[in-house]
Length: 319
Image (cartoon, rainbow, N blue to C red):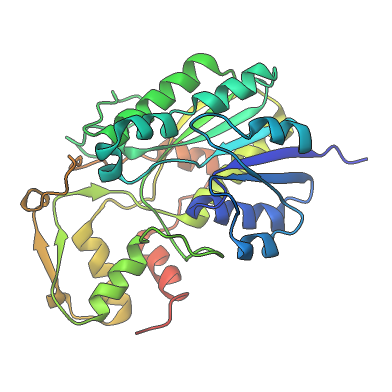
């Protein structure tokens, strides 16, 4: 009989969570899959598409609901933590909630209390753990976050690396790509740029903030590859990986890529400095990342920004 493994996606109704669940369902026949959600009822579209996937309401801040996972699903072999308060301005306005949400104390406690520290914890961190004063940060570089969101993610990394035996921390850049089965409430970067540029009016974009955006399917493939590697090898993992795309781009360059594919005029893209806008939160200037470790693990380069934008726009009807 096939030796089945259990995987739990914490925050399965979010952008990455939905893409990951859909991928796992279609590619991983030897996995039993479950996900957690914060709202009382998960989106019906998601339930309809994932009929054999169990769902559990869990409050990651308090841990309420994890015991139901143990009772009904069993102790997971792999946990992917996608749950986060990820809007930097919102984190700045409510630092206590940001810390309680982004530092997964209740999740780690639940796994340790159930003597399940041999399970693999894949935790989504952020490129905003870096200070942003140079280009192409390496994983070994010092983490000096400039805002509450970054600080809460550094605290999470510290908690996991100091208390858990088997983990992978993925420092994710901006994740972009097609909309989810059940559309997420937050604005998606390529879809937003396409929408504002399609209106034919000038729009401000920053020329002096740099990231390495990662196509969502590459992030999903990374998580799936980590899962498969651990299942086949059963070797302890203690990894930190920069999870970004191969291109260092500014918001202006991102917008130009959208305009190029759609045929919008570049004159609509007004290049401004990030310092000219008060966003209510400090933002690091250049948190582009060296993704050598990611490429070596996957054995391939992630999707170029140009190709990722093209693939994303193909899923959106032209205005």
